[in-house]
Length: 191
Image (tube, rainbow, N blue to C red):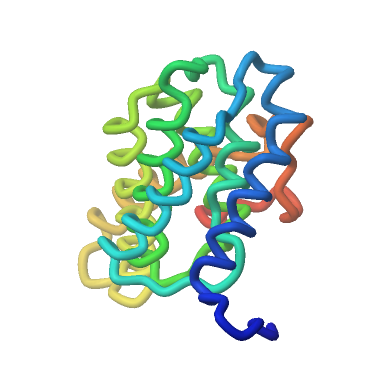
């Protein structure tokens, strides 16, 4: 990117993110949600805070637009709390990306988050966080049990929990027609 003399690259990136979020109103209005300029600014600032808190660096547009489009059709969001919900979802997204060591794509994670938010957490962000990190824990334990066959009972318990989670959190059944991630219906829990 060529930065004109006197322009701050960070400010240009913030303006670009704000323009992208403005374009979301075409879709979100169908669900009764409208992002005001103050809402957009809160989302952009929330992204920066989440990145700072998780000690991550991100180039490009960020995940706010994908979260807005992915969650605007949820029955558990309203116009009043939507911006705060997306700000918290951004924080959870970046935390999970760090914890999972980037082993899941952004699109797959957003689809999983939406599925869990609607089906398991019923709009409760704390329950969503627990479900996400429990699923990650099951996935990690499954990989560990594949490498260590010392305790067959523990291996069976982990495999049973993993199988249950894989069927319960099948994201391909819960994604809106408006927002379809690019993956082919597979879930990170299927690995």
